[in-house]
Length: 126
Image (cartoon, rainbow, N blue to C red; front, side, top):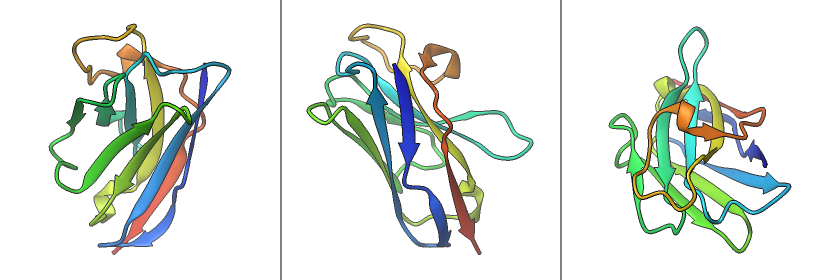
């Protein structure tokens, strides 16, 4: 399965964006989906993830309370609502599919996900 992230753009600090992650090829309704981001010169870092059913989610401390991850399995799409954006949120955002079938624990390592697409650039100006 290949994922395509979209919805990025340029926004002022304090603004909001909603990212979408759509799958092509086959459904990902039985897998966790995660968002990671990578700023220039930095490693890819975990942002948020949601389990296969949509019941559980996990967030990086840096985005907790500001970002919300959700999924619509009927549309094979996962969303990342980003509010109160800060300049340090500037990065390319990627989504990935979890390698486990209906896993019981949400992972935060990029090695646990695959299907990365090109990502979508989010730029937050101060």
